[in-house]
Length: 229
Image 1 (cartoon, rainbow, N blue to C red):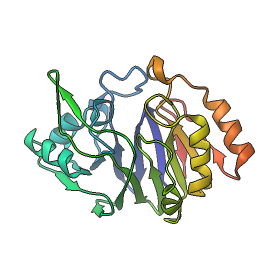
Image 2 (cartoon, rainbow, N blue to C red):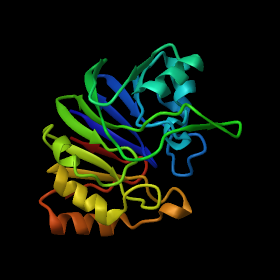
Image 3 (cartoon, helix red, strand yellow):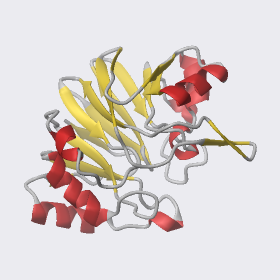
């Protein structure tokens, strides 16, 4: 059994067979977070891009737990410079094995930089993540707009897609519903909404749109809630 837990914003935990994977663990300073960074101890951390609301507590968690951290190349190099011994820089199209599964990095249309002391560091490119873990395939789109090659990502044989719906910084509900069609996924979980004023959305309206337009099931998770795959 594989469990997906929503920690708020775009942060998630995946758990199966005694293994724990954290995705974009932005907890400290996240007004929707349901756990503190000290409460999670993953073996692996997967990052979509370098923005502070996605990198979040990665450095602290990785130093404390020794977790492997898989990301795009420049972000991985920056994490190493911050003392993360388990940083694994990778790039689009590459598949990296981790304890209990694999992740394939896919394109995403967004920006990527970490702000530190008023300066933008860790430049690079964003990514989506096709995660194979616990016998399931889950796509974490990260922050992105809608793009046509999501149809190719759908050919990975997805069991679930996790998509941003907040608009302003990412695709909004209408484009995310179209992404569900492109991905041909049987289920979708929305994220990256209602954290900040610019990204206020009604997830139930998104659910109605998805289930009216596609055969997919939309699973709306409150922060702290879990979904069994």
